[in-house]
Image (tube, rainbow over all chains, first blue to last red; front, top):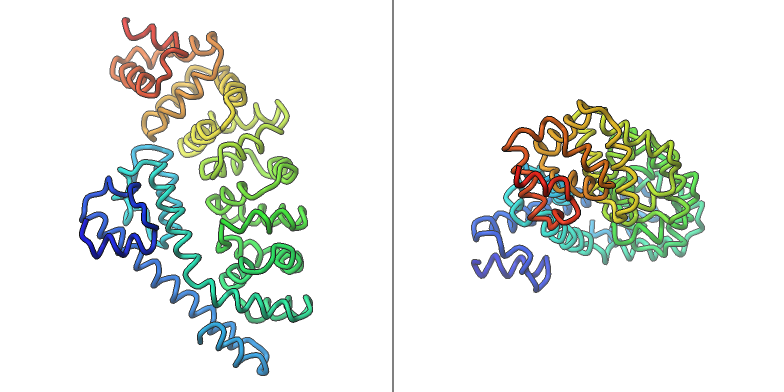
Amino acid sequence: MRSDVRDKLRAWLGDDLTFVEALPDDELARLCAALEAARRGQAKALATASDEAVRQMPAPLRGTIGKILGR
Amino acid sequence: MADNLAASAELVKLARALGTTQDEIAFTTPLGAAGIRLLRERVVGALYDEHRAAFRRVAAITRTLPMPVNVRITLRAFPPLLAARVAGEMTPERAAELANRLPVEYLAESCVHLDPRRAAPLISRLDPDRVLAVVVELVDRDDFVTLGRLLDAASEKLLAHLAAAISDEALLRIGCYAESGAQLARAIGVLTPERLRGIVRTAVTGPPDLRAAGLATIGRLDDDLLRGRLAEYAASASDDVLTAMLHTALDEGAVAEMLSAVAAMGEDAQRRVVSLPALGDEAVRTRLVDAAADLGLLPILAPLDALRSS
């Protein structure tokens, strides 16, 4: 397994990767890419939902909630 | 698409967790059902843990506000995706108090996004009538993956209500995606013999996908006695119906599930199944005998074992 792929998978899935070691290197790289895409997709969905939440908030709460949600 | 029914169900769930299609992650099929499940559990953990700090801070704010204000802000400002993530960071008591005041459609959509690791303590505190209404809403949406996850979070008392409230077909399709064979057995085990016969009849006389759901359900049960009862009901069907089940098992990669059902039958019922004309086909017979040998089931499948020398 390529070390950069292994490092990323370990960071996301935990140190013990024996359960995916049956996959060849190119498929582990695809798994890594699928996880990266999922993280990006989740971040985008949460950002959209957070923006909508801030927009709908009563004005006095908008700044605080926006800051908490990182918007 | 996996050639094994259990792995196929796990692929569906992994694809859902990753927000992609089964085709895109079909390369994980060699991991098998157990490996794909473990991968999914790690993926879900990683994704849900990623933004927890922000949601925990929002949850902290909700503690300072009266519940009616939280309800108003949630409905006005928080899409279900966000509400589910915040609810996962609230105490189960507080999250349930909020959820009990939200509309059923909103709750159903929130359930789709709820962290499965935090679902049980929350659901056990919800008003059972609301949970039932959410289940009915999710059945209407054909969201059996979410329902399979909710089944895992339901208390024994709630399971009895749930199983009684939904159709045979919905129960079978939920069985396909149930996270726990023990929970599925509890949900089905409380049903009356008449209802169980009806569920089996619905499965064996249904279209191929429903027959496959029936095989997946019986294969997932964590209770051999219950599996045996259901299998005996199935064995009383006509030759045509049993032959259709056999072909579904062969075509959909559910031979292991079918053999586990036959192995749980009494010997008379086993003989009835093994005497189906379809087993006159040597290729079919060999496939079943080899699969039973691989699964270690031949010692309890005497009529099938006897076919080895025929």
